[in-house]
Length: 374
Image (spheres, rainbow, N blue to C red):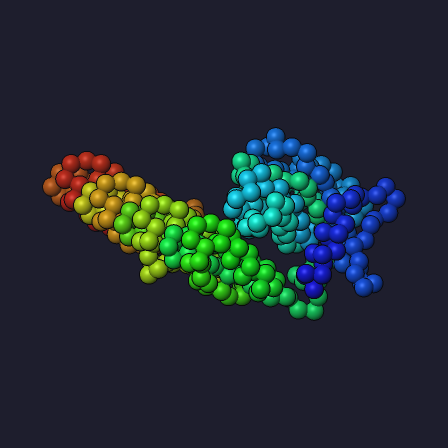
């Protein structure tokens, strides 16, 4: 059903505008699916950062003349670099909604994102892309009278495929409502580069999106660097992390056993993670909306310093919203220098980090001890 809807949108997207007297309706086989509203983008003055507030300036009028809910947006991409591979990232109120991959070998590609938000929030949407490789030709909004999760009786399955080149160790991603099309996108992207006869399917699965952004991280065991991927599905998040690692030195050491991904059922809330380096006697704190991102931030900071191969595994803790008005308190002492440090934090771990950080900045850092936290 979604495939049919998208075809209808693409048919009308080039010329549809909100008429003065009545609403244009996108239909297929006599069934009304919603309303469409297109704006052409004439230049890239925003340097790869396009705010819908500048393009759709009258949300009240658009709502009045079309519908109260935005179902999705269709973006027409022109590739200024024919070999470019990258993403178009959508944001709503500063939060990343999804990263859509521009992998087609053709110079023009359409990417579609489901939004399901009130029309009055058009100005809160923005998209980002690399202006050196891509330009946005037009944006078409699909609008509907009701806020629903699907156009048809059941949600159509979406497929994702990761290809890997065993020689270059690079990965390529394809996603579509057709398993064949998803494989073709990934395969053709891989075959467009060197050693095409070494392109193989690495992973394929049905795309399962979460209610929030999901994250995956991967480590290079030689450089000790950690790479993060975030998307609405675990497969896409894994690809982004793998892809980032594969572009760096020693990419044959991107360790599969280091891959860690979010639990889609994980309780949401701010997380704090701490990593310690027992050789340099330094501690590193990371924060994020899930444990993967928070631990990545801490590990990234540790890996950027000396003795990065001695960075410990991250210890994580979720912030307790009930205690926001009463922070945790930790007392850190150094029995050699005979100094004590009292610090506070939103979590016990953050308070411990603040105390360790203060203690470890002085002499005899290897003797800093947590005396008490509450």
